[in-house]
Image (cartoon, rainbow, N blue to C red):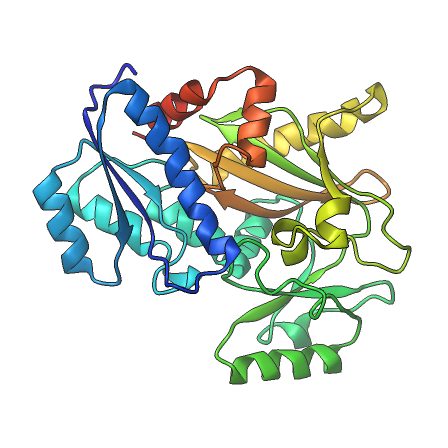
Length: 326
């Protein structure tokens, strides 16, 4: 590592005793970084990020890290507070891995990200909110999937919520129901086509990964929902697979995806590492679904798989993230 870093503080999301799989996964990310630092002989401290800024500040001031690894995905179990952790690191003047507080906020708020895609002429799927629904012209072919504004890891997208809506009255009633429960949701135009998750490190696009929906029934919605990621016994988990293999017929499409990834990196001022998720319609038109700043980076994650496919070792992955982040 070319940068002189000897003391590293790894902050991760605070985990309650009954934490579900999608939250416990952060411990695998901790292990990934910790094992590299241990091999490098770095003094490393691991701590949850508490819902108490003074407590976190006391730990930073007492340990005096040269670097913070930011693995905070939720605060108090809520994804909308995710930007608070890097804001606190900025306040202390300590360099940290991954996205800035600004880039994390604007990408984790999916509605704001959609507005910024539009402002930057980045093609994204049509979306509907409780506020703009009467201003959106519905086409006869439009079908919308309801998604959480803030939650990560496909939380809220499961077999119970996987229903497509095609008229305003249905969506208005759904939005009203969610609002009563204190949750913010929006509806995104469902694009029946191919899905790509493309990893980036230090501004470089890693090998393209396509998500294949194997043997899905014709009437089954093809999305990477909660079951696809976390329920190992489910049909969705077993039949949703990642592929890095393409033929020459995809070259033109892959070039478009690479250009869009780089544009997202530059326009959203990303750093360290990120993943851009796409849907591609039947006419090979790509639509950016979302930008994932600080995506999952455990040893068995799609991000690490893509980087290894490129030729990077795990240690090189960590070093690149740190060098680009600070």
